[in-house]
Length: 225
Image 1 (tube, helix red, strand yellow):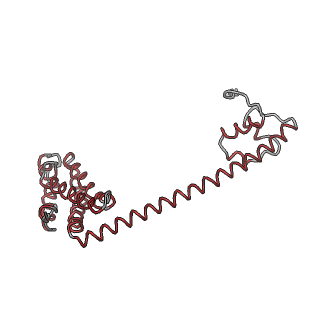
Image 2: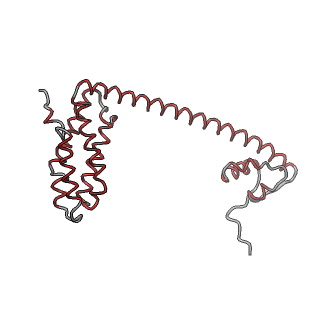
Image 3: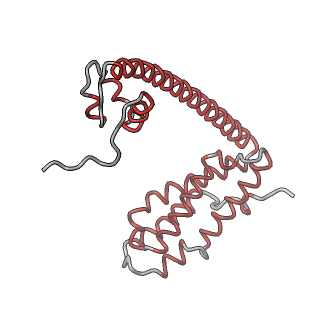
C-alpha cells in the first residue's frame, strides 16, 4: 500500500509552518508563565508533536528498509530529535518560547524538506547515497585516527625503552661509584643525571631506580621546621 503525503509529512507546505509560528509568536508575547496554551500547541498530546512523531517513525521505517541503521546516519534523525526536545522544553518552560522560537521555526522547515527527501524516490536515493558516503568517510577517518594513535604509542613506547636503557646504564655506574639516593630529589642531584629522565612519571622513575638498586626510603618525607 502506497503511503499518502498527507499521512506522512508533518506539514503540507511552508504556509502551515508560518501559520503555526505566528501562533507561537503570539503565545511568546503573552504571559510566559501560562503553561496550558503551550501544552496545547507543543505538548506531547498536541497535533504538532503527534505529526512530528508520525513523520519521524515513517522516515525511519522507509530508510531502514533501504539499509539497517541508515536513519541514524542522516541529518533527519538529529534534527527531528532536536525539534522534539525543544517542543517538550517550551511546554515545561513557556518563558523560553521567545528565545527558542527561531530554532523551532528552522527545524520545522527542515522537517518539511526532510519529508520531501524521504517521500520522493529520487530524492531519497540521493539522501541514501550521501548518508552511506558519510558513513564510509567517518569509518576511514576513524581507522586513520586509530592507526595514527598506534604509531604515536609505538614511538612513545620506544622512547621510554631507550630512556630506561640509558638510565639503567647510568645508575649502574653511579652505584658502582658509591652513589646513594633516598629520594627522587636526591637522585636527580647526582652527577651526570640526565634531566630528560624526569620526563617520565614520578612512579616510573622510582620503579627504575629500585630496579637499578637504589634504596629509597618509604613513606612521605617529613616536613622541615
